[in-house]
Length: 178
Image (cartoon, rainbow, N blue to C red; front, side, top):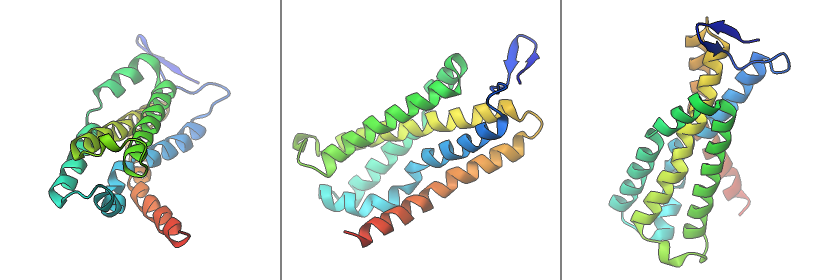
């Protein structure tokens, strides 16, 4: 149950949502938000599909990272609307960004958008979701575990780091069956 501290209400737990459920959800949110770190897994096929140079591929990756690191709007949203809505917004941004990327790279649906700078902007949009999901997962758990912040952040960020290995395993499994 939340506690009062000055004017601000601490915690996002209610009698029906205990802090361990929020922690488990936070681990999954951070695992979902680590997708920009898995760029190396699909960089080769992306380079082949677009017919771009290594320099252009590095440009796409760098712009994507820039999109992931600009998280001020995610923080403002989390402060104003809470972590649940912030996570939903992040999920929608990821869906739109990766759906557009798929449309450009993997299909012939959007052939006029196959320029590296457009793909870089779409990748930045998809990576922007990372900061929204990360902010939602970390902020909710920092409020729910006020005395164990270091451990909680460490465990959550472990999920973030594991994301790229999960992406690699999924890609490996998918290439076996294709």
